[in-house]
Image (cartoon, rainbow, N blue to C red):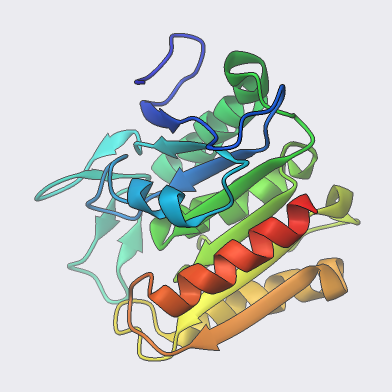
Amino acid sequence: MTSRPALPLVHVVRPPRVPSAHPPLLVLLHGIGADERDLLPLAAHLDPRFLVVSLRAPHEAEPMGFAWYAIDWRTSPPRHDAAQAAASVDTLVAFLAGAPAALGTDPARTFLFGFSQGAAMSLAAALARPDLVRGAVLHSGRPLPGQPAPAGELAGLEVLVLHGRADPVLPPEHGRAIRDLLAPALGPRLVHRELDGAHEVTAETLGEAARWLSARLG
């Protein structure tokens, strides 16, 4: 199943393996240089009750794949295209707002799984519209530059932050920056784990994510 006219981003849908009238929704957001097929194999290892949607970021990346925002690697530190990032957050929020009606999912049970740049986008969208997101797995990510700290109780949002101890692309301090940004507002609804691995989804981190997501469904 490919993209539907009612939703603003190209995506692929995997129906729930355990059908229900209004299933929970899990949205997968890839990192820079990948596409909507990159994270889709994870669906087979996650709770079978989820309807899983894997998104394609809106901008072409060099030399391949797609990006949520451009990064100029020639500068130190690398420069992020703030305008593209902001526009992508708006587009992602529009997708999340329309997805339950378009896909027939439970609007109170929308979850995000973002990897790398997709984690930064998931964080930004969840903070912009916590009413649309029940929970988020932020894997090997970082906050967007200038990401404001959340205000209020964030509508019951829960977050799992996962990071590889040996990540050479985004070292673990970036995951700690997410933790420090969210901890005052989320308290015990935030879990931060550093595990063995580099800039990758490992069997261990996937297992952590799967258990955390299933627990949120009850």
